Amino acid sequence: MSPAPLAFVDEALAELRRQGVFRPLRVLDSEQAARASVDGRSVVNLSSNNYLGLTTHPALRERALEAVRTLGVGTGSVRPIAGTMALHMELERRLAAFKRTEAAVVFQSGFTANAGTVAALLGRDDVIVSDELNHASIIDGARLSRATIKVFPHGDAAAARTLVAALPRTQKTLLITDGVFSMDGDLGALPALCDVADEFGCLMMVDDAHASGVFGRQGRGTVDHFGVHGRVHVQVGTLSKAIGALGGYVAGSRSLIEFLHHKARPFLFSTSHPPSVTATCLAALDVLESDSGLIERLWDNTRFFKAGLAALGLDTGRSESPITPVIVGDAALAMKLSDRLFALGVFAQGIGFPTVPQGKARVRTIVTATHTRDELTFALDAFAMAAAELGVARVS
Image 1: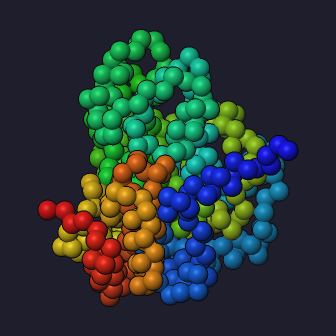
Image 2: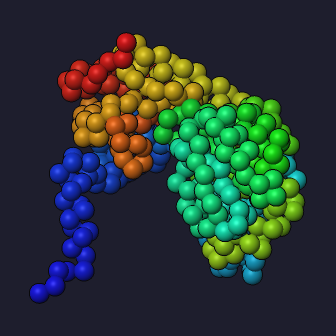
Image 3: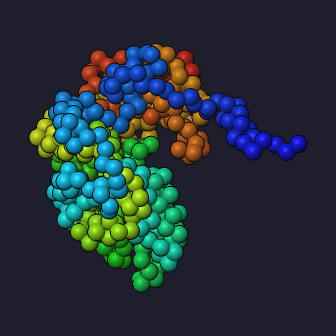
């Protein structure tokens, strides 16, 4: 008798359990807040990308409800046919102005914004030069494009230059980096990579998903943070993290955006954002442009929490952002640390391979603007207790 067609799935799951890295989904029972109910337990939430707490902001709630009352719950079509509303156009105008570009286009997610854009811009005769730790959506877009992919060591602009210099000047080349790397929390080498792109005539692209709402004036991202406006041809951002809602976007020249209207498959073949989501994103931009206190509180909390982890001797790697990993190395140990923290009242997910390299497993934390000092102190005390119980190594 032949084996069941899905036997390999059961075998793979069994192996994950044997390695101690099988993870059931944690279920949020409340709104996404600094203290939340997860699996029926009240916990300090250090696993959310809700950097500014906008998922529950009163202005965003009201705009969403108003949009549902006046425009319904859905658009009923893809953007190129009948799914483009005036709200979509207004949001794209606002995003372009916010990012200091000519135009912008909204996608259904940050993942599709990256993957759809890379796949649309490049083909089998082209080359993509990519940081080794770039997001999975960039990697998938590069594969879909069928371009030649060349990878440089993380953050090494000199190595990127060597790769680019060896290519024919006539060959279309995309140089791409994350603005903030989602697992280590460090910044991409954007200014130096812009120098390479300028020197060799490359198309320069940055994924600013974790920089939007966090870095730069009023949260405009790493292009603004580093002062490289006009030198990055393709800026990708997200509406799903600091903005508090859902979606992704690309900002750049008007010709780039019109090209994506005709060539980016996620834009062409996915139903557009419902009115409530689009209106919510507009309200979030209003908040970003009028309330600098949220970003200031985010960074105050980030500095406090990082200092606390450092005082405990925990390895936080090279983080420069509110994303602060506690690196333990062994994947099973990372999952045990995450579970012990949860039992102590702190929700911080364990992350292992393939999301991070083998031997670099960690518990990943994200501080938000809405955490109180009492909540962060509580979380630090839990880390101290759990790390001591499990023998997590201290760094010198």
